Length: 115
Length: 116
Image (tube, rainbow over all chains, first blue to last red; front, side, top):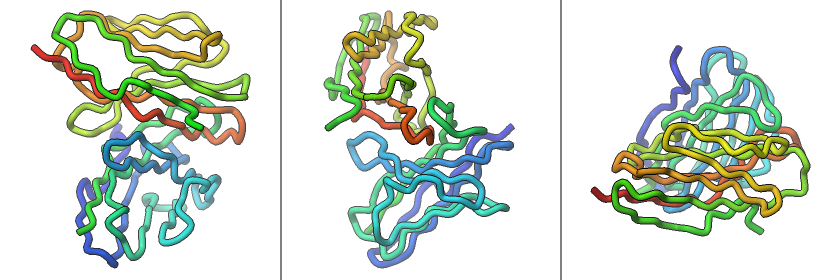
């Protein structure tokens, strides 16, 4: 039973390029959360999705960032026109259900470096 | 305002010492959950414990123990007889009932270094 899979583990992009981060949840999990960890900081919630729906995107920057979780396939976090400040570790977590206290399982993260 | 505060940025101890990591939280909800995660140097997040707001019993798991006190809004984590492998960043997190999304609010983390 594979855990949450994130790829790539490391991603280097030049300023202005697009970054696509993928997250395959655990089998049977239909809820996905994305978090961002800036250097030397804690994780910050970005977005919560269920299959084909964005439930809470209160932590997403207003521009350049988008997320999706299609009926088939992984969840994608997309960052357009990356800037140096986007350099961070992006973690995905999945759970079988949502709601307060849900135990979500984290992936190993994607470390994005913008040069 | 910080909802989860981990006031200790870094702690350094010598192996076999006991160490307590502090976590203070803030919420208006009566139903909430508190979590602790470990992030070793390899970078992944390892779940340690989850506690709901109605259960104030302290918990012990091997060398790890947790002290939950609603009166002081604290959920402290103690490692007894620390080992070098305990060196990591430890995060405390809060899940509130309002919104009912299950999203976590993390503290800034405490970096623990255990020296041999």
